[in-house]
Amino acid sequence: MTPAEAQAFLGRQGLAPSRERGQNFLHDDRLAQKLVATAGVTPDDAVLEIGTGLGILTRALAPAARRVRTVEIDGGLVRGIEQESLLPADVELIHGDALDLDFAVQVAELGPPVKIVANLPYSVATPLLRRFLDHADILAGWGVMVQREVAQRLRASPGSKAYGSLSVIHQWLTQVGPALDLHGQCFYPVPKVVSTFITLSPREDPLVAPGNQGELARMERIVRAGFAHRRKTVVNSLKQAAGIAPATVEAVLAANGLDGRVRAEALSPEAWQKVSVALSDEEIGEEGVS
Image 1 (cartoon, rainbow, N blue to C red):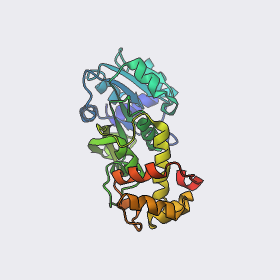
Image 2: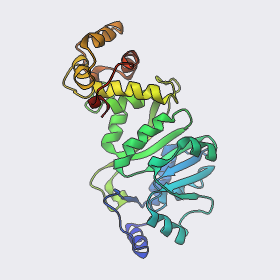
Image 3: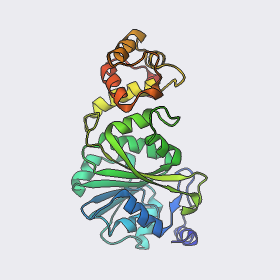
Image 4: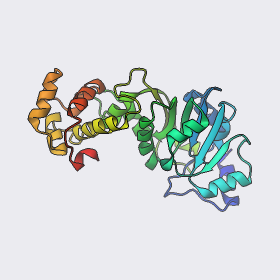
């Protein structure tokens, strides 16, 4: 599908790309095939696609996977896709909001292994990535289109500028896999940013028990508070953002062989796991959970 064909389809349906929804539609069929390969979709996999768009990626997924269910929030797109029969007959198209999905139900209905493939507005990509972590015990993996900066944060190493709480919590539970940068010309209309399609899969040796959402949430609050004031030491950041007594943090750091003057970006995911477990019962202030 060319940009002109994408524009023509939208015009026939009385639609236009929505800025509010951040709609930039993938239109390159050959690139869609490459994304399916990058996601590692096999004939054994069922795929839950989030963000049907114009169906470009959906059509590439259909012959590669055992089963495809695709979810689109835009009712006009759903209507147009159905009216013009843009998807293979065996693909299940659902009108709904991915943020409202019960992923446990989706996996049970599709039958494992289930992989998620998502081409999303950037405003909801990060919240959905976080929800995928809660279901790392039942998902076989996921590939998501995000801003390049978000992809850099997901795979960042300790000590780097991009390394932060997003890096830590994802590296506790996942292995970051292949990624592919996509420039604006791959989309209609052309966005002003570079996108990255990045893949993640559950770690064989997770640092947090997969499926234990309460434990992950408690530990995450500690990490977010620790990174809340990057120029400060972990001790001072946790005091200011979470109200945890410096002596308590200093004792935990010392027990794990860590310098009390260390800053958040210097701690590896493994070190953060130990610190977070030890501090996860502490009361956290509102700033620490932002």
